[in-house]
Length: 260
Image 1 (cartoon, helix red, strand yellow):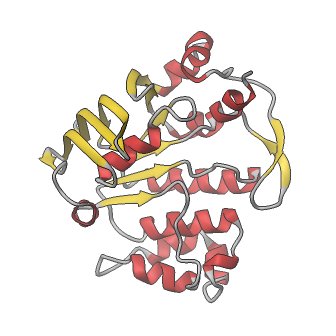
Image 2: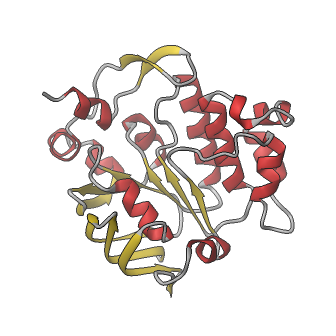
């Protein structure tokens, strides 16, 4: 299968400190490829390096064309959508104004966004800063899905959210992946099991494993070795940033934070 994205010997630095070291992997032209690893190993920095948001070196090819010397806005114009870890919505603007600012296509996919996120339609006149964390995440994803992308980069979309919102976001990503390949950074193993066909595991700023998602998740020893968490374990109750109580599915971050 051809690759929509090829990353070769990618390194990145933030504030003079190297955070990604010699990372190489490819993303197939269909489906979801998940980037996994313990907290703080360089997953988000890898996404930012691909987009040119941090100092970088190495080769990044989009459909065979180099983009590693392009500024971020040019990469986005080439058809790379981005859903950042911290949502980064314009809090002083309304939901509708946030969406209008994100449009770059002549015919944005309004019907898709409205079908996936009906709650945003009802809140179109509400300021984004007054939305819950889950609603802001929906808005961040909706902005990316408005446009017809060649690749979608999604960073930690379910972090800290209530189970109901996690389910809705996973469903939206599953639907989006029918038309655009997705590179997904995610800690929730249940979401990975639902969505991902392939995985890239990063540790210490380097790729330590690539392969089918089902193969990794089916190997208990490998999951513990790479992620520090059981492939299957009882969920841990915690509060979400939606102020909605509920049990959260197992994540590699939760296991890492619990380590002595």
